[in-house]
Image (cartoon, rainbow, N blue to C red; front, top):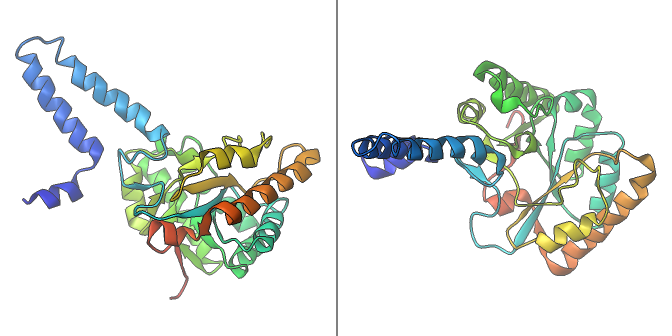
Length: 269
């Protein structure tokens, strides 16, 4: 088998596991205690890597531009929501920006009119799981596969088939690759976020993004209204400030342009 085939078949996790096992066998010849070191290191990687959205340990992950580009992409998670999606669409239109909405299947089923509005405004849609279950990657393979498939099906009823998936909180797992392969989905996370806790903390939201932003980044924001209704105006001001700065100092483009492949396709095409 050629080396290029090995790169396709084995994930970094599998390669690391094989290496750790071989090292353990070698070290075990000298000292059984030393043999535990590579195995413990491998287990720590397995537990820790899924919590880093840019680390493709178990499967390929796109978290920023794969080629040198000055473009940055806007994405919004956790919608659609009647209290936030229309506001975002108006703000994006005012600043002539295009975004990708990673939507929750259950919410999409409840608000198909918002999915239609997102598409009508020229934006794209990705799969963000059915209920945004933070423990989705720990569920049995069948549950994980059904969760992703159900979201694909509900969005298909709105005339769109996502080609990208963003796991809840960006957490991946060893079972995810097979579930995505069945749906022809690839994992797209992000490289720049404000750590806003789902718009629970919107103070200086724009500043937090702009301090970290680099060419080729994928920005992750939330399609959720602030928990405190009195902060809705502040949230909109922060977004207005951010969107204006993107036009002045950066090159905002579509997610499709940043990652170099389609984000979705229309059903029936």
